[in-house]
Image 1 (tube, rainbow, N blue to C red):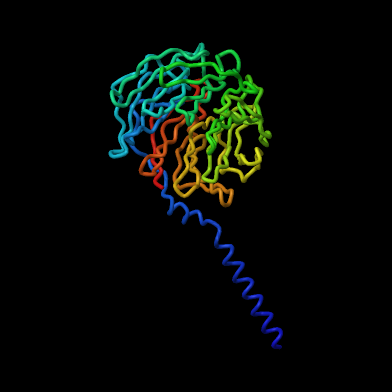
Image 2 (cartoon, one colour):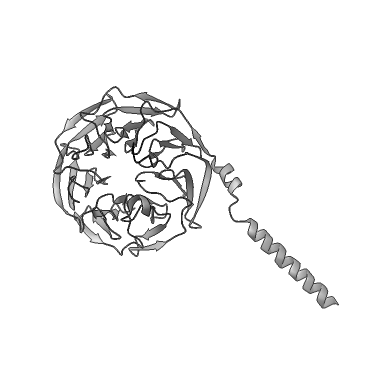
Length: 379
């Protein structure tokens, strides 16, 4: 009898502990309460997608170029003020319209703008500098190739790596460096593969990891390589677990890299929910849990939060948070209504995230149509 009593008590303790343990995983409503939700803020003056968004030293964000739809491109820019949560048009305009260009913040606070499309025929080789002190754009010498789908990363030495992309006809493996001291571009070699729409991220030691991309239309890569600015050379890593392009990557607090989303050769019909983590100590990729939304056309739509989690806000109808401690993705509160392809996400100085523009799936007749909406994710 006493044995039965102790057995009942033991079972009760185990069940209670089990129920308690089941309550410990993240409760979605509690999680969303902690992290806030997505809320609409002031609208842009123009509907934009495939633009760039750059956080300026003064805490404001400049939104440059982009398109409303195919053939309707912009040379204009507008500035978001986090003090008022409003957009105002920049005084200056770029020398040409640009879609799919890159914008890189330089050490002196200016912005290097390279390539992109000014029409639907061929991308541009032209470049210009935006000066936030005068709110003006100034043309500089051209890059060596017409460029779209290229990667541009600021190196620790102050120069900018321009890698890969397309000249409008084929994929490029060429690499050049921009020197802000004399505003010149210098060819320095080639990657191990041509890459269009690859994802680039700076590792903790200053090297640059480039993952995936397309060699040409329909030929998507699972390979990755690392650029070493000390030797101006590339070294292959182990391959990813999936071919990916038009995906995104971000360095985690512990130095590893989260690589997620993108598509295979089916493009719109091959979008991924999958993600993986690159470990620079072993040069290998390990799959992690899937996202809640399939996402592609998402370069630059993730930011690292102060607690080490990652906010992802592009390519899907909603946003989500990746927790590197559990390797899981959790939806945030609020949705965008459309997938926000080629949107932008910027972490503000006050630790909120600004999500701007993008386009949905569109229609066969009109094609993709961008939104002029913007959202704030309050952390």
